[in-house]
Image 1 (cartoon, helix red, strand yellow):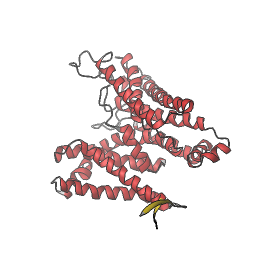
Image 2 (cartoon, rainbow, N blue to C red):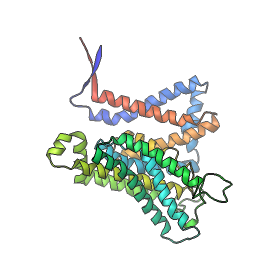
Image 3 (cartoon, one colour):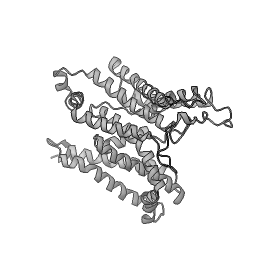
Image 4 (cartoon, rainbow, N blue to C red):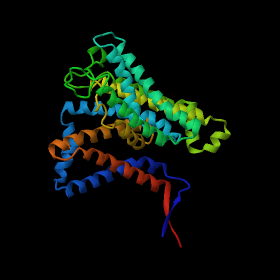
Length: 351
């Protein structure tokens, strides 16, 4: 019989190697999956991982999908370091989109230059407020944030459904659950002609730099890490646990809310039920795959974006179901967590 025994000094090298191990294991498992479904393995991988990047448009779509994942994951990583697990970034993204979309709808027909900045601010406030609810429940009633953030995602999704089916439904939209198409003044400017790449990418670039500096230079980041690694030491040092909870949940909610505005004022161009293909949940994998490091998250974000593109290509080229994207995401997370288990623990034979 074997039991898991904590390692006294987990390997830092293996900690950073684990994402590569998880990627390789995912590819091997994916090979078996394609074989079991009767698909040519090499051709399937070509469709899934190579075909999406064979054109400049494919690369532009990779950037479009990577940016919200990277932006959300940067905020989530702060909380994960403190062992504050925000699982509801999807809901915060939706509320941010609703807040920013409300500004666009209220200013219908106007091309004022301040509309998009106002939408971004509204989205940040909306996402932060949605993160403030579990923060209040955590600090006031010690409610588990993994449950409250996740449950609030369903509330946000149903609120979106109500708004686009009711008060904000486009009267000329043939009864589809969607708002009006936003005017040019409520959309980010296109950066690359013939693509959907727009100026919202600069928000993600700024966020990566800001979080990298915060992680490297900020004393608050030190407090957050101490609180996550050694709560007793954090309490002894006088660091406020409640302040950490509020900061982490508000920050992650804010980044998710801004990402929501980036979608509705960018590639989507309106409020509808499909403003996010699950970016808020996928960003959790991105944060851990990037080892909660600002630059590591960038690499992980592009990999996850490629999985999204590959899933879409596989639906067309291989006639596979839409669930193929979620399967690859799930395998990646499974193998990453499995690697971490054996980095932090070792098997010990029981007599």
